[in-house]
Amino acid sequence: MRPCLPPLDAVPKPSWVAPPLSCDCHFHIFGPYDRFPLDPGRHYDPPAALIPAYLRVAEALGIQRMVIVQPSVYGTDNACSLDAAARFGLDRARVVAVVDEGLDDAALRALHTRGVRGVRFNAVSGNGTPLDQLEALARRIAPLGWHLQLYAEGHQLPDLAPRLASLPVEVVVDHMGGVRTADGLNAPAFQALLRLVGEGRAWVKLCGYRISSAGPPFHDVAPFARALLDAAPDRCVWGTDWPHPSLSAWMPDDGVLLDRLGEWAPSAAERRRVLVDNPARLYGF
Image (cartoon, rainbow, N blue to C red):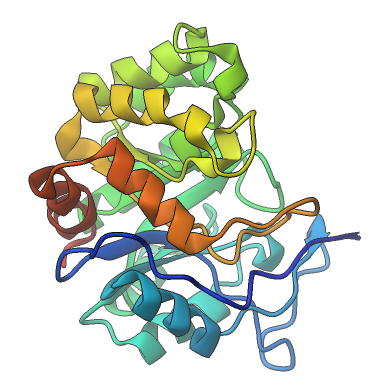
């Protein structure tokens, strides 16, 4: 099993103050493992990343709302993510779960009462729902007002884009579409993502460090983030991706990640849209 680094202990504050009710739209909780053991089908071994540690990050960044995303290491067992939402409080926390077609409508409604507002397909880390269930699950979750969240490699987007555009639910694309910055703004994958968000068929998470070809401090991501903000300012949200799972060479500083967003969205109005207004619409805060 592939090991990965733990998050940094220290969280330096960013150089600007996030607006009230700012939302971290993408992070994970791992453990405690005696209560929430990892799934045997996982592809990496994350160190425990517990609620108190995340709350220190949230306090340093000025985060008051939060979206827990079900990680691949738990498969379709959402117990850890649901427990975290309850502990944070459903007045400020939501969950993006991983489910499959076997879950009946009553079970889906029960998840809604526990804060779930979307289902995630992970075509990168695996151990989740296969992409051939996209359409069927979209139809199932549409009556609940949930969205479908996709984590894919950039090269997959051109082929997936027509399927995503035809779904009867909102679509949220993880990690800026997984398009490597070295491929350039004109890469077919990035152009497919721009069309999806620009035509109102998708949202995008400006969790940009994973697409960086240069590495920390991720300045090469700026043109891509700015292009997405220009194409669809009302369909961009932001997340830390704490505790930054599956990394083995370096670990991002979450204060730096928020500083990068401040550079991409320099005005107070843009920052409020990305951190407060857009998440409130998408997740129902």
